[in-house]
Image 1: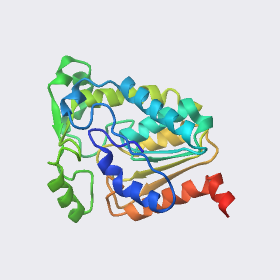
Image 2: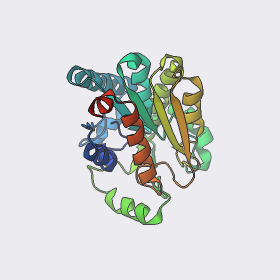
Image 3: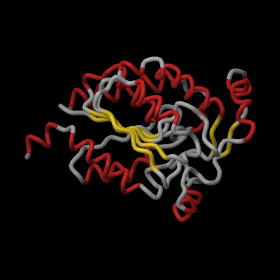
Image 4: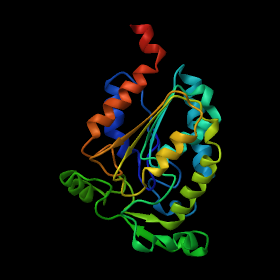
Length: 253
């Protein structure tokens, strides 16, 4: 499991616990530039994310007969990048809130200026603060997230522009190789995603070579689909997908 931009494995915990209770070993990793030393987000590169994710995948492929991937936001983009290179070795992928573009309704009015800032030294000095609605439509959950964001092991309370830059550079690489994905795939995205519109997920769906693919658009959630109004639906759809594509389950039955 790969978490989102400026997030941490904590945001994947409930999802991972659910899958573990239903028979799957689950590995949640902390991506380079995230974690204890938040200053590292200013120097991390998208290639470091790719190299890290590839190494973790190779470790699991050596240990297990079946390996599935899932990711949220940046994690979904990374999962897609891995599928482009290891498509014949991955059993299936569940992508959540895939972020190929930063075009959600929450981004500030001056977002049209972002391309200019992203390609100058300015990107090392500007951060976009995490703010309402914190990617969550459910008001009670949103209030809880607002309280816990101050904890350093949960994630950062801002988005450095340099991190946006690396995410979009990764997006370019992934978008240029989508036809290399043949892995079964389930894509889930909220219609009202506040960080990235459904354009990202439809670009993946429409350009991959996978014959076994499904896209689900949620009607009552924002970006953080693992914590919003339809989280139970998301958990169960992911579980059904993994069970359907697992040869191990067939052997047990």
